[in-house]
Length: 561
Image 1 (cartoon, rainbow, N blue to C red):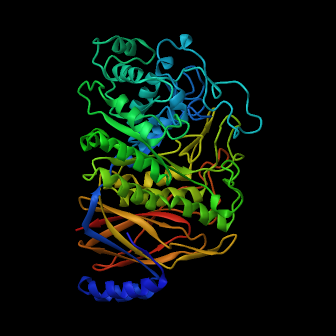
Image 2 (image 1 turned 60 degrees about the horizontal axis):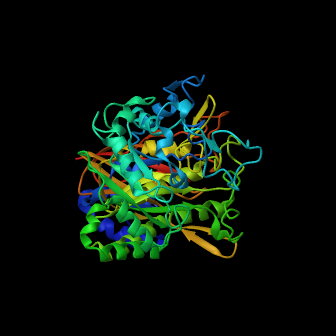
Image 3 (image 1 turned 180 degrees about the vertical axis):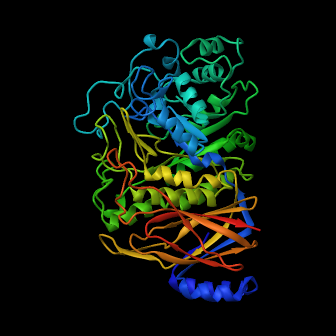
Protein backbone atom coordinates (compact mmCIF):
# COMPACT_ATOMS: atom_id res chain seq x y z
CA UNK A 1 0.00 0.00 0.00
CA UNK A 2 1.22 3.51 -0.77
CA UNK A 3 0.23 6.75 0.94
CA UNK A 4 1.12 10.04 -0.77
CA UNK A 5 0.52 13.75 -0.46
CA UNK A 6 -1.19 16.16 -2.85
CA UNK A 7 1.86 16.72 -5.11
CA UNK A 8 2.46 13.01 -5.58
CA UNK A 9 -1.26 12.45 -6.05
CA UNK A 10 -1.46 14.85 -9.02
CA UNK A 11 1.31 13.10 -10.90
CA UNK A 12 0.12 9.63 -9.91
CA UNK A 13 -3.47 10.32 -10.88
CA UNK A 14 -2.40 11.55 -14.31
CA UNK A 15 -0.36 8.42 -14.95
CA UNK A 16 -3.09 6.14 -13.65
CA UNK A 17 -5.65 7.96 -15.78
CA UNK A 18 -3.64 7.27 -18.92
CA UNK A 19 -3.35 3.62 -18.00
CA UNK A 20 -7.08 3.34 -17.49
CA UNK A 21 -8.27 4.99 -20.69
CA UNK A 22 -9.40 1.64 -22.05
CA UNK A 23 -11.65 1.26 -19.03
CA UNK A 24 -13.79 4.22 -20.05
CA UNK A 25 -12.36 7.65 -20.86
CA UNK A 26 -15.58 9.54 -20.44
CA UNK A 27 -16.27 8.27 -16.91
CA UNK A 28 -12.65 8.86 -15.93
CA UNK A 29 -12.64 12.46 -17.16
CA UNK A 30 -15.88 13.30 -15.34
CA UNK A 31 -14.79 11.68 -12.09
CA UNK A 32 -11.26 13.12 -12.09
CA UNK A 33 -12.60 16.69 -12.03
CA UNK A 34 -14.54 15.94 -8.83
CA UNK A 35 -11.87 14.03 -6.93
CA UNK A 36 -8.98 15.25 -4.78
CA UNK A 37 -7.91 11.69 -3.91
CA UNK A 38 -7.54 8.33 -5.58
CA UNK A 39 -7.91 4.70 -4.55
CA UNK A 40 -6.68 2.05 -6.94
CA UNK A 41 -7.36 -1.65 -6.28
CA UNK A 42 -5.12 -4.13 -8.10
CA UNK A 43 -7.24 -7.28 -8.13
CA UNK A 44 -4.52 -9.38 -9.75
CA UNK A 45 -1.86 -8.61 -7.11
CA UNK A 46 -2.63 -10.97 -4.24
CA UNK A 47 -0.92 -10.57 -0.86
CA UNK A 48 -2.27 -13.65 0.88
CA UNK A 49 -5.34 -15.06 2.58
CA UNK A 50 -6.61 -12.91 5.46
CA UNK A 51 -6.76 -15.16 8.51
CA UNK A 52 -10.07 -15.01 10.33
CA UNK A 53 -8.02 -14.99 13.53
CA UNK A 54 -6.79 -11.46 12.77
CA UNK A 55 -10.19 -10.42 14.16
CA UNK A 56 -9.57 -12.12 17.50
CA UNK A 57 -10.31 -10.99 21.06
CA UNK A 58 -8.71 -10.98 24.49
CA UNK A 59 -10.36 -11.58 27.88
CA UNK A 60 -8.27 -11.24 31.02
CA UNK A 61 -9.26 -11.53 34.68
CA UNK A 62 -8.85 -7.77 35.00
CA UNK A 63 -11.42 -5.43 36.54
CA UNK A 64 -14.86 -5.97 35.00
CA UNK A 65 -13.86 -8.13 32.05
CA UNK A 66 -14.87 -11.48 33.53
CA UNK A 67 -16.97 -10.65 36.60
CA UNK A 68 -19.71 -8.21 35.53
CA UNK A 69 -18.67 -8.57 31.89
CA UNK A 70 -18.69 -12.15 30.67
CA UNK A 71 -19.78 -13.96 33.84
CA UNK A 72 -22.91 -12.98 35.78
CA UNK A 73 -23.71 -16.40 37.34
CA UNK A 74 -26.59 -18.78 36.79
CA UNK A 75 -28.71 -17.16 39.51
CA UNK A 76 -28.35 -13.64 38.14
CA UNK A 77 -31.34 -11.59 37.01
CA UNK A 78 -29.25 -10.62 34.02
CA UNK A 79 -30.25 -12.85 31.07
CA UNK A 80 -27.61 -15.56 30.91
CA UNK A 81 -26.82 -18.95 29.49
CA UNK A 82 -25.25 -21.07 32.19
CA UNK A 83 -24.00 -17.92 33.94
CA UNK A 84 -22.62 -16.29 30.77
CA UNK A 85 -24.13 -12.98 29.67
CA UNK A 86 -26.52 -13.79 26.80
CA UNK A 87 -26.34 -10.36 25.14
CA UNK A 88 -22.58 -10.72 24.83
CA UNK A 89 -22.84 -14.15 23.25
CA UNK A 90 -25.38 -12.98 20.69
CA UNK A 91 -23.27 -9.95 19.77
CA UNK A 92 -20.16 -12.13 19.37
CA UNK A 93 -22.02 -14.37 16.93
CA UNK A 94 -22.88 -11.39 14.74
CA UNK A 95 -19.21 -10.53 14.20
CA UNK A 96 -18.25 -14.21 13.80
CA UNK A 97 -15.70 -13.96 16.61
CA UNK A 98 -12.93 -16.37 15.58
CA UNK A 99 -10.73 -16.73 18.67
CA UNK A 100 -10.56 -15.51 22.28
CA UNK A 101 -7.34 -15.29 24.31
CA UNK A 102 -7.63 -16.14 28.03
CA UNK A 103 -6.90 -15.85 31.04
CA UNK A 104 -4.34 -13.08 30.41
CA UNK A 105 -2.30 -10.97 30.08
CA UNK A 106 -0.24 -10.47 33.19
CA UNK A 107 -2.89 -12.41 35.11
CA UNK A 108 -1.97 -15.58 33.20
CA UNK A 109 1.47 -15.87 34.80
CA UNK A 110 -0.06 -15.78 38.28
CA UNK A 111 -2.86 -18.24 37.45
CA UNK A 112 -3.08 -21.92 38.34
CA UNK A 113 -5.53 -23.52 35.91
CA UNK A 114 -6.41 -26.19 38.49
CA UNK A 115 -8.01 -23.54 40.74
CA UNK A 116 -10.79 -23.11 38.19
CA UNK A 117 -11.85 -26.77 38.11
CA UNK A 118 -14.17 -28.89 40.22
CA UNK A 119 -17.21 -27.76 42.26
CA UNK A 120 -17.34 -23.96 42.47
CA UNK A 121 -17.97 -23.95 46.22
CA UNK A 122 -14.66 -25.76 46.72
CA UNK A 123 -12.55 -23.61 44.45
CA UNK A 124 -9.92 -21.49 46.22
CA UNK A 125 -10.06 -17.71 46.41
CA UNK A 126 -6.84 -16.19 45.10
CA UNK A 127 -5.28 -12.75 45.04
CA UNK A 128 -5.64 -11.26 41.57
CA UNK A 129 -2.43 -10.02 39.92
CA UNK A 130 -4.01 -6.56 39.57
CA UNK A 131 -5.01 -6.20 43.25
CA UNK A 132 -2.68 -3.24 43.92
CA UNK A 133 -2.67 -1.59 40.49
CA UNK A 134 -2.35 2.22 40.77
CA UNK A 135 -5.02 2.71 38.07
CA UNK A 136 -7.93 1.56 40.27
CA UNK A 137 -10.68 4.23 40.03
CA UNK A 138 -11.76 6.28 43.00
CA UNK A 139 -14.41 4.46 45.01
CA UNK A 140 -13.40 0.99 43.85
CA UNK A 141 -14.21 -1.62 46.55
CA UNK A 142 -11.26 -3.16 48.35
CA UNK A 143 -12.76 -6.63 48.13
CA UNK A 144 -14.71 -8.63 45.59
CA UNK A 145 -13.96 -10.90 42.62
CA UNK A 146 -12.10 -8.08 40.85
CA UNK A 147 -9.33 -8.14 43.49
CA UNK A 148 -9.70 -11.63 44.99
CA UNK A 149 -10.73 -14.10 42.32
CA UNK A 150 -13.18 -16.80 43.52
CA UNK A 151 -12.38 -18.88 40.43
CA UNK A 152 -16.07 -19.27 39.60
CA UNK A 153 -15.07 -18.65 36.00
CA UNK A 154 -12.53 -21.36 35.19
CA UNK A 155 -11.48 -23.39 32.20
CA UNK A 156 -14.83 -25.17 31.68
CA UNK A 157 -16.73 -21.90 31.95
CA UNK A 158 -14.39 -20.22 29.48
CA UNK A 159 -14.66 -23.09 27.02
CA UNK A 160 -18.45 -22.92 27.30
CA UNK A 161 -18.27 -19.21 26.47
CA UNK A 162 -16.20 -20.01 23.39
CA UNK A 163 -18.62 -22.70 22.28
CA UNK A 164 -21.62 -20.42 22.68
CA UNK A 165 -19.87 -17.63 20.79
CA UNK A 166 -18.57 -19.86 18.02
CA UNK A 167 -14.95 -18.95 18.78
CA UNK A 168 -11.81 -21.02 19.29
CA UNK A 169 -9.83 -20.77 22.52
CA UNK A 170 -6.34 -19.37 22.78
CA UNK A 171 -5.03 -20.37 26.23
CA UNK A 172 -2.11 -18.54 27.83
CA UNK A 173 0.02 -20.76 30.07
CA UNK A 174 1.69 -19.70 33.31
CA UNK A 175 5.42 -19.81 32.59
CA UNK A 176 6.58 -17.60 35.46
CA UNK A 177 4.72 -19.32 38.31
CA UNK A 178 4.15 -22.91 37.17
CA UNK A 179 6.38 -25.46 35.47
CA UNK A 180 6.40 -27.44 32.26
CA UNK A 181 4.71 -30.40 33.98
CA UNK A 182 1.67 -28.30 34.96
CA UNK A 183 1.46 -27.10 31.37
CA UNK A 184 1.59 -30.71 30.18
CA UNK A 185 -1.25 -31.61 32.54
CA UNK A 186 -3.37 -28.64 31.42
CA UNK A 187 -3.13 -29.83 27.82
CA UNK A 188 -4.06 -33.28 29.09
CA UNK A 189 -7.11 -31.94 30.98
CA UNK A 190 -8.30 -29.99 27.95
CA UNK A 191 -7.56 -32.34 25.06
CA UNK A 192 -7.21 -35.96 26.21
CA UNK A 193 -9.95 -38.36 24.94
CA UNK A 194 -12.86 -39.25 27.25
CA UNK A 195 -12.04 -41.70 30.02
CA UNK A 196 -8.36 -42.00 29.13
CA UNK A 197 -6.84 -39.85 31.87
CA UNK A 198 -7.67 -38.48 35.30
CA UNK A 199 -7.62 -35.08 33.65
CA UNK A 200 -10.32 -36.13 31.19
CA UNK A 201 -12.43 -37.48 34.06
CA UNK A 202 -12.05 -34.21 35.99
CA UNK A 203 -13.01 -32.26 32.88
CA UNK A 204 -16.24 -34.24 32.53
CA UNK A 205 -17.15 -34.12 36.23
CA UNK A 206 -16.99 -30.39 36.93
CA UNK A 207 -19.66 -27.71 36.43
CA UNK A 208 -20.33 -27.23 32.72
CA UNK A 209 -18.17 -30.33 32.31
CA UNK A 210 -17.49 -31.90 28.98
CA UNK A 211 -16.93 -35.56 28.29
CA UNK A 212 -15.64 -34.68 24.85
CA UNK A 213 -12.21 -33.07 24.59
CA UNK A 214 -12.06 -29.37 23.79
CA UNK A 215 -9.37 -29.87 21.13
CA UNK A 216 -7.71 -26.52 21.83
CA UNK A 217 -5.09 -25.69 19.20
CA UNK A 218 -3.69 -22.33 20.31
CA UNK A 219 -1.39 -22.20 23.35
CA UNK A 220 0.57 -19.17 24.50
CA UNK A 221 3.78 -20.09 26.29
CA UNK A 222 3.94 -17.30 28.85
CA UNK A 223 2.97 -13.65 28.50
CA UNK A 224 5.23 -10.60 28.37
CA UNK A 225 8.09 -12.75 29.62
CA UNK A 226 10.36 -9.71 29.29
CA UNK A 227 8.36 -8.07 32.12
CA UNK A 228 5.46 -9.22 34.32
CA UNK A 229 5.85 -12.75 32.98
CA UNK A 230 9.22 -13.35 34.61
CA UNK A 231 11.69 -10.55 33.74
CA UNK A 232 13.63 -12.98 31.54
CA UNK A 233 16.29 -12.12 29.05
CA UNK A 234 15.39 -13.27 25.52
CA UNK A 235 18.00 -16.02 25.77
CA UNK A 236 16.59 -17.25 29.08
CA UNK A 237 13.08 -17.21 27.68
CA UNK A 238 14.16 -19.15 24.59
CA UNK A 239 15.39 -21.94 26.86
CA UNK A 240 12.12 -21.90 28.86
CA UNK A 241 10.06 -22.00 25.68
CA UNK A 242 11.92 -25.08 24.44
CA UNK A 243 11.49 -26.79 27.79
CA UNK A 244 7.73 -26.13 27.92
CA UNK A 245 7.07 -27.33 24.38
CA UNK A 246 9.56 -30.20 24.12
CA UNK A 247 7.21 -33.15 24.69
CA UNK A 248 3.58 -32.06 24.87
CA UNK A 249 0.98 -34.75 23.95
CA UNK A 250 -0.99 -33.95 20.81
CA UNK A 251 -4.07 -36.20 21.14
CA UNK A 252 -4.61 -35.79 17.41
CA UNK A 253 -4.76 -31.99 17.69
CA UNK A 254 -2.52 -29.73 15.59
CA UNK A 255 -1.10 -27.74 18.51
CA UNK A 256 0.02 -24.24 17.64
CA UNK A 257 2.43 -22.75 20.18
CA UNK A 258 2.76 -18.98 20.40
CA UNK A 259 5.93 -17.57 21.92
CA UNK A 260 5.90 -14.47 24.12
CA UNK A 261 7.22 -11.85 21.74
CA UNK A 262 8.32 -8.26 21.87
CA UNK A 263 6.88 -5.16 23.44
CA UNK A 264 6.50 -2.55 20.69
CA UNK A 265 9.98 -1.85 19.24
CA UNK A 266 12.08 -4.10 21.45
CA UNK A 267 13.92 -5.57 18.49
CA UNK A 268 16.62 -6.96 20.78
CA UNK A 269 14.03 -9.29 22.32
CA UNK A 270 13.10 -10.67 18.90
CA UNK A 271 16.71 -10.94 17.80
CA UNK A 272 17.81 -12.57 21.07
CA UNK A 273 15.08 -15.23 21.02
CA UNK A 274 15.49 -16.16 17.37
CA UNK A 275 19.29 -16.22 17.48
CA UNK A 276 19.28 -18.41 20.59
CA UNK A 277 16.68 -20.76 19.10
CA UNK A 278 18.71 -21.02 15.89
CA UNK A 279 21.68 -22.31 17.90
CA UNK A 280 19.70 -25.50 18.55
CA UNK A 281 18.85 -25.88 14.88
CA UNK A 282 16.64 -24.02 12.41
CA UNK A 283 14.24 -27.01 12.39
CA UNK A 284 12.93 -25.76 15.76
CA UNK A 285 11.21 -22.84 14.02
CA UNK A 286 8.82 -25.38 12.55
CA UNK A 287 7.46 -25.95 16.07
CA UNK A 288 6.69 -22.26 16.68
CA UNK A 289 3.39 -21.15 15.20
CA UNK A 290 3.47 -17.51 16.22
CA UNK A 291 5.67 -14.77 17.64
CA UNK A 292 3.77 -12.37 19.88
CA UNK A 293 3.79 -8.59 19.53
CA UNK A 294 2.17 -6.05 21.87
CA UNK A 295 1.52 -2.42 21.02
CA UNK A 296 -0.83 0.07 22.69
CA UNK A 297 -1.49 3.61 21.51
CA UNK A 298 -1.50 6.59 23.84
CA UNK A 299 -0.41 10.24 23.69
CA UNK A 300 3.14 9.79 24.94
CA UNK A 301 4.51 11.98 22.16
CA UNK A 302 2.86 15.21 23.35
CA UNK A 303 5.53 16.03 25.90
CA UNK A 304 3.45 15.75 29.06
CA UNK A 305 5.65 13.29 30.88
CA UNK A 306 7.63 10.14 30.37
CA UNK A 307 5.86 8.51 33.29
CA UNK A 308 4.14 5.36 31.99
CA UNK A 309 0.97 5.87 34.03
CA UNK A 310 0.66 9.64 33.73
CA UNK A 311 1.36 9.89 29.98
CA UNK A 312 -2.04 8.64 28.82
CA UNK A 313 -4.64 11.18 27.78
CA UNK A 314 -8.37 11.24 28.44
CA UNK A 315 -10.75 8.93 26.59
CA UNK A 316 -13.38 11.63 26.09
CA UNK A 317 -11.68 15.01 26.50
CA UNK A 318 -9.13 15.39 23.72
CA UNK A 319 -8.12 18.13 21.32
CA UNK A 320 -7.02 18.02 17.70
CA UNK A 321 -3.37 17.26 18.44
CA UNK A 322 -4.30 14.48 20.88
CA UNK A 323 -6.66 12.99 18.31
CA UNK A 324 -4.02 12.79 15.59
CA UNK A 325 -1.15 11.81 17.86
CA UNK A 326 -3.08 8.80 19.12
CA UNK A 327 -3.69 7.71 15.53
CA UNK A 328 -0.03 8.31 14.73
CA UNK A 329 1.01 6.05 17.60
CA UNK A 330 -1.42 3.35 16.48
CA UNK A 331 -0.15 3.65 12.91
CA UNK A 332 3.30 2.55 14.10
CA UNK A 333 1.92 -0.97 13.80
CA UNK A 334 2.91 -0.95 10.12
CA UNK A 335 6.61 -0.38 10.78
CA UNK A 336 6.64 -2.70 13.79
CA UNK A 337 5.33 -5.58 11.69
CA UNK A 338 7.87 -4.94 8.95
CA UNK A 339 10.86 -4.54 11.26
CA UNK A 340 10.16 -7.55 13.47
CA UNK A 341 9.41 -9.62 10.37
CA UNK A 342 12.76 -8.68 8.85
CA UNK A 343 14.65 -9.73 12.00
CA UNK A 344 12.71 -13.01 12.20
CA UNK A 345 13.64 -13.73 8.59
CA UNK A 346 17.36 -13.44 9.32
CA UNK A 347 17.11 -16.69 11.31
CA UNK A 348 13.90 -18.29 10.05
CA UNK A 349 14.54 -17.82 6.35
CA UNK A 350 11.43 -19.74 5.31
CA UNK A 351 9.28 -17.56 7.58
CA UNK A 352 7.59 -20.54 9.17
CA UNK A 353 6.90 -18.43 12.27
CA UNK A 354 4.15 -15.84 11.78
CA UNK A 355 3.33 -12.76 13.83
CA UNK A 356 0.57 -12.86 16.45
CA UNK A 357 -0.35 -9.37 17.66
CA UNK A 358 -2.17 -10.63 20.73
CA UNK A 359 -2.53 -7.25 22.46
CA UNK A 360 -3.34 -4.01 20.65
CA UNK A 361 -5.57 -0.99 21.13
CA UNK A 362 -5.93 2.45 22.74
CA UNK A 363 -5.05 3.04 26.39
CA UNK A 364 -6.24 6.11 28.34
CA UNK A 365 -6.03 7.33 31.89
CA UNK A 366 -8.72 6.42 34.40
CA UNK A 367 -11.89 8.45 34.76
CA UNK A 368 -14.22 7.36 31.96
CA UNK A 369 -14.96 3.81 33.16
CA UNK A 370 -18.66 2.98 33.53
CA UNK A 371 -18.19 1.55 37.04
CA UNK A 372 -15.45 1.81 39.72
CA UNK A 373 -14.82 -1.95 39.64
CA UNK A 374 -13.76 -1.72 35.99
CA UNK A 375 -10.00 -1.38 36.32
CA UNK A 376 -8.54 0.04 33.07
CA UNK A 377 -12.10 0.56 31.85
CA UNK A 378 -12.60 3.45 29.44
CA UNK A 379 -15.13 4.92 27.07
CA UNK A 380 -14.86 4.29 23.36
CA UNK A 381 -15.41 7.12 20.86
CA UNK A 382 -15.26 7.65 17.10
CA UNK A 383 -11.53 8.23 17.57
CA UNK A 384 -11.22 4.63 18.76
CA UNK A 385 -13.26 3.42 15.80
CA UNK A 386 -10.88 5.20 13.42
CA UNK A 387 -7.91 3.65 15.26
CA UNK A 388 -9.52 0.20 15.01
CA UNK A 389 -10.16 0.66 11.30
CA UNK A 390 -6.62 1.71 10.44
CA UNK A 391 -5.18 -1.12 12.58
CA UNK A 392 -7.33 -3.88 11.08
CA UNK A 393 -6.51 -2.58 7.61
CA UNK A 394 -2.82 -2.79 8.51
CA UNK A 395 -3.23 -6.45 9.48
CA UNK A 396 -5.09 -7.14 6.22
CA UNK A 397 -2.32 -5.56 4.16
CA UNK A 398 0.14 -7.87 5.93
CA UNK A 399 -1.94 -11.03 5.58
CA UNK A 400 1.22 -12.88 4.56
CA UNK A 401 2.84 -12.05 7.91
CA UNK A 402 0.11 -11.77 10.57
CA UNK A 403 -1.64 -15.02 11.54
CA UNK A 404 -3.65 -13.72 14.49
CA UNK A 405 -4.41 -10.53 16.40
CA UNK A 406 -6.38 -9.93 19.62
CA UNK A 407 -7.80 -6.53 20.44
CA UNK A 408 -7.37 -5.63 24.12
CA UNK A 409 -9.81 -6.14 25.57
CA UNK A 410 -13.21 -7.67 24.91
CA UNK A 411 -15.43 -5.91 27.46
CA UNK A 412 -15.15 -3.22 30.15
CA UNK A 413 -11.41 -2.75 29.65
CA UNK A 414 -9.24 -0.65 27.33
CA UNK A 415 -10.27 -0.78 23.65
CA UNK A 416 -13.45 -2.76 24.30
CA UNK A 417 -16.13 -3.80 21.88
CA UNK A 418 -18.66 -3.88 24.75
CA UNK A 419 -19.46 -2.06 27.97
CA UNK A 420 -21.65 -3.68 30.61
CA UNK A 421 -22.67 -3.34 34.23
CA UNK A 422 -25.31 -5.54 35.84
CA UNK A 423 -28.22 -5.60 33.36
CA UNK A 424 -26.91 -2.74 31.20
CA UNK A 425 -25.08 -3.58 27.98
CA UNK A 426 -23.92 -1.49 25.04
CA UNK A 427 -21.98 -1.91 21.80
CA UNK A 428 -19.09 0.50 21.29
CA UNK A 429 -18.08 2.16 17.99
CA UNK A 430 -15.21 -0.33 17.78
CA UNK A 431 -17.72 -3.19 17.71
CA UNK A 432 -19.27 -1.69 14.60
CA UNK A 433 -15.87 -1.57 12.89
CA UNK A 434 -15.40 -5.29 13.54
CA UNK A 435 -18.86 -5.94 12.12
CA UNK A 436 -18.03 -3.93 8.99
CA UNK A 437 -14.81 -5.89 8.41
CA UNK A 438 -16.41 -9.36 8.57
CA UNK A 439 -16.33 -9.85 4.75
CA UNK A 440 -12.51 -9.65 4.85
CA UNK A 441 -12.34 -12.85 6.93
CA UNK A 442 -10.86 -15.66 4.86
CA UNK A 443 -10.77 -13.54 1.70
CA UNK A 444 -7.71 -12.92 -0.48
CA UNK A 445 -5.99 -9.65 0.37
CA UNK A 446 -5.06 -7.71 -2.78
CA UNK A 447 -2.88 -4.67 -3.22
CA UNK A 448 -4.48 -1.23 -2.99
CA UNK A 449 -2.90 2.20 -3.59
CA UNK A 450 -4.11 5.34 -1.82
CA UNK A 451 -3.33 8.92 -2.85
CA UNK A 452 -4.76 11.84 -0.88
CA UNK A 453 -3.77 15.26 0.47
CA UNK A 454 -2.02 14.92 3.82
CA UNK A 455 -3.63 16.05 7.06
CA UNK A 456 -1.77 18.96 8.66
CA UNK A 457 -2.10 19.83 12.33
CA UNK A 458 -0.22 21.57 15.14
CA UNK A 459 1.61 19.53 17.74
CA UNK A 460 2.83 21.04 21.00
CA UNK A 461 6.28 21.75 19.61
CA UNK A 462 5.96 21.87 15.80
CA UNK A 463 3.63 21.36 12.80
CA UNK A 464 2.91 17.75 11.88
CA UNK A 465 1.44 15.73 9.04
CA UNK A 466 -0.57 12.52 8.78
CA UNK A 467 -1.70 10.53 5.78
CA UNK A 468 -4.99 11.43 4.13
CA UNK A 469 -6.60 8.07 3.27
CA UNK A 470 -5.69 4.48 4.04
CA UNK A 471 -7.32 1.07 3.85
CA UNK A 472 -7.23 -2.47 2.53
CA UNK A 473 -8.91 -4.60 -0.10
CA UNK A 474 -9.83 -8.27 -0.44
CA UNK A 475 -11.56 -10.50 -2.96
CA UNK A 476 -13.85 -13.45 -2.26
CA UNK A 477 -15.36 -14.85 -5.45
CA UNK A 478 -17.15 -12.03 -7.23
CA UNK A 479 -17.15 -9.78 -4.15
CA UNK A 480 -14.50 -7.12 -3.62
CA UNK A 481 -14.40 -5.56 -0.14
CA UNK A 482 -12.62 -2.22 0.19
CA UNK A 483 -12.35 -0.67 3.65
CA UNK A 484 -11.12 2.90 3.92
CA UNK A 485 -10.28 5.17 6.84
CA UNK A 486 -10.40 8.96 6.47
CA UNK A 487 -8.62 10.30 9.57
CA UNK A 488 -9.32 14.00 8.94
CA UNK A 489 -11.41 15.41 11.79
CA UNK A 490 -13.39 17.88 9.67
CA UNK A 491 -12.79 17.35 5.93
CA UNK A 492 -14.31 14.76 3.61
CA UNK A 493 -12.30 13.25 0.77
CA UNK A 494 -13.72 12.95 -2.74
CA UNK A 495 -11.88 9.92 -4.08
CA UNK A 496 -11.78 8.36 -7.48
CA UNK A 497 -12.01 4.59 -6.97
CA UNK A 498 -10.54 2.47 -9.75
CA UNK A 499 -10.60 -1.32 -9.83
CA UNK A 500 -7.89 -2.68 -12.11
CA UNK A 501 -8.27 -6.25 -13.34
CA UNK A 502 -12.05 -6.51 -13.00
CA UNK A 503 -15.19 -4.69 -14.07
CA UNK A 504 -17.36 -3.03 -11.42
CA UNK A 505 -20.97 -4.19 -11.72
CA UNK A 506 -22.38 -2.48 -8.63
CA UNK A 507 -21.36 -1.14 -5.23
CA UNK A 508 -22.83 -0.24 -1.89
CA UNK A 509 -21.38 1.46 1.18
CA UNK A 510 -21.57 1.06 4.93
CA UNK A 511 -20.25 4.09 6.83
CA UNK A 512 -19.36 4.75 10.44
CA UNK A 513 -18.94 8.47 11.15
CA UNK A 514 -20.28 11.26 13.34
CA UNK A 515 -20.05 15.03 13.21
CA UNK A 516 -18.23 15.00 16.54
CA UNK A 517 -15.26 12.64 16.95
CA UNK A 518 -15.99 12.58 20.69
CA UNK A 519 -19.31 10.81 20.04
CA UNK A 520 -19.76 7.53 21.90
CA UNK A 521 -22.41 5.08 23.04
CA UNK A 522 -23.51 4.97 26.66
CA UNK A 523 -26.12 3.22 28.77
CA UNK A 524 -28.27 6.36 28.41
CA UNK A 525 -27.71 6.71 24.64
CA UNK A 526 -26.72 3.24 23.44
CA UNK A 527 -27.18 4.02 19.72
CA UNK A 528 -25.46 7.38 19.43
CA UNK A 529 -22.85 5.89 17.08
CA UNK A 530 -24.03 3.35 14.51
CA UNK A 531 -23.11 2.62 10.89
CA UNK A 532 -25.40 3.63 8.05
CA UNK A 533 -25.82 2.23 4.56
CA UNK A 534 -25.47 4.36 1.43
CA UNK A 535 -26.05 3.90 -2.27
CA UNK A 536 -23.01 4.16 -4.54
CA UNK A 537 -23.38 5.39 -8.10
CA UNK A 538 -21.11 3.50 -10.47
CA UNK A 539 -20.68 4.08 -14.22
CA UNK A 540 -21.06 1.27 -16.69
CA UNK A 541 -17.29 1.14 -17.00
CA UNK A 542 -14.28 2.83 -15.47
CA UNK A 543 -13.70 4.40 -12.06
CA UNK A 544 -16.36 5.93 -9.82
CA UNK A 545 -16.18 8.73 -7.27
CA UNK A 546 -17.03 8.26 -3.62
CA UNK A 547 -17.04 10.84 -0.82
CA UNK A 548 -15.40 9.53 2.35
CA UNK A 549 -16.83 11.39 5.35
CA UNK A 550 -14.57 13.08 7.92
CA UNK A 551 -13.20 10.87 10.71
CA UNK A 552 -14.84 7.82 9.19
CA UNK A 553 -14.46 4.14 8.55
CA UNK A 554 -16.16 3.02 5.33
CA UNK A 555 -16.75 -0.38 3.75
CA UNK A 556 -17.38 -0.47 0.02
CA UNK A 557 -18.89 -3.78 -1.07
CA UNK A 558 -18.20 -4.01 -4.78
CA UNK A 559 -19.59 -6.70 -7.05
CA UNK A 560 -17.07 -7.37 -9.81
CA UNK A 561 -16.99 -9.39 -13.01
